[in-house]
Length: 479
RNA sequence: GGCCUCAUAGUAUAAUGGUUAGUACAACGGGUUUUCAUCCCGUCAAUGUGGGUUCAAUUCCCGCUGAGGUCACCA
View 1 (cartoon, chains in turn cyan, purple):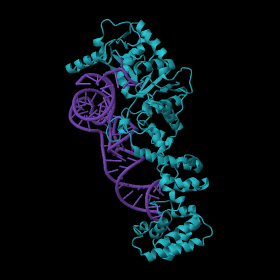
View 2 (cartoon, chains in turn brown, cyan; view 1 turned 90 degrees about the vertical axis):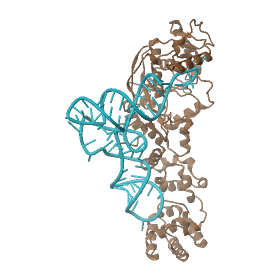
View 3 (spheres, chains in turn red, blue; view 1 turned 60 degrees about the vertical axis):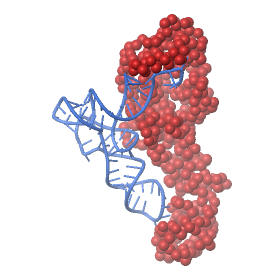
């Protein structure tokens, strides 16, 4: 069956990792079944509307590689895709309910409703508005909220994730479907839109589970076929068990882009947080996710967001891209992450650096701190050498001599490459009688003054003979 | 408080009415001529609790506990 799914966010700000999964799963299902993915902007709450949020949403989806078939800018046969532009449609549907006696205008002031609620709380009985229906509702006209008239009864339904569900009449109430300002509520609008747009699978967070009976009543009142319901469990914060939200500091998805996380890794991580295909596979490409995805293997319980695992996965992806697609492909993704000093370097040299450092990267932004010395001379810091755990036992004369011998050997080396450098190192070890840890630490620090670096022969090969020798000499002078 | 949902190591998960309860991340230890990382090897670590059904329960049923959601003119 071709699934028509949708991602229907409110333009209230950025998309964070706590809610982007309700875009990923609908996408995977739509692509797997060769159906359609719709982007719909639910902007009926004018109070919370944030300018530019729609762009943010689209940007996030594009970055993750999630494309859609119908939506605000690209349009489609069932537009418009901003709910605020669909007012007439909702009003027409609402009138049907008014005409069939299933909706009534409710002039009751907010204070009065609050009083009813308070009364119930005090009596410790559930607050159901249908017990307080106004006796003679006026004719419905703009400025008066419209309520659905519930018919309390039992409902049974099936959820693709949660299984068979049931709710009693106490779950049914007279929900507001059109607000005072003439805009529909989510509860009403999404049903109208999903129906008009031909959505087959309603995929959303579990928080809508408890209102589903009211939705079922609405489908019934309109004589609509029920869609498939897919309730997605929440992503929880790392420490507490709370649903991950902006208030808990949930970062926007695109913030991770700036932190050097690859979209492939992010998609992989989020898709597999709360879903697996039953195998022991950990790394999934988008194509593999589309192929293997299935609704019945979505977890029922919420999963904690664990950034450590995301970082690990990102490292895996960096290596995967390098190994499978080559340095050029990886390089394309690193553009924004090089240190300032690399700006003037040529591309070939940058790629050379990338190819010896890539397996140490957890994020692309590690490039900034890890490769600086490849692009400019580091500041000579003798303390770093003198206090090094392998070198502090050696005398200054020792260090000086080691440097001298090294410079001598390296300056006459004719074929400056990794293999011949390794031969020189082996010869130097014999000549000086020092341990590898001592000689190599000294040379490594002298050319980089970095806490870590790639294999020594590769590092020197990349830096080149001239730079290597000038740095070694600079250190020899300083000691 | 009412209603609804969920429950395997620290985390994400696999599996089965009978297994030494598997895998990955993390942690810890070890190996690869320095470091950091990769890679490899190893260690630690789980079926929330109490009943019931059964020859046998982590798996099926019930209570409890714990966690989450919802009870808006927000979505």
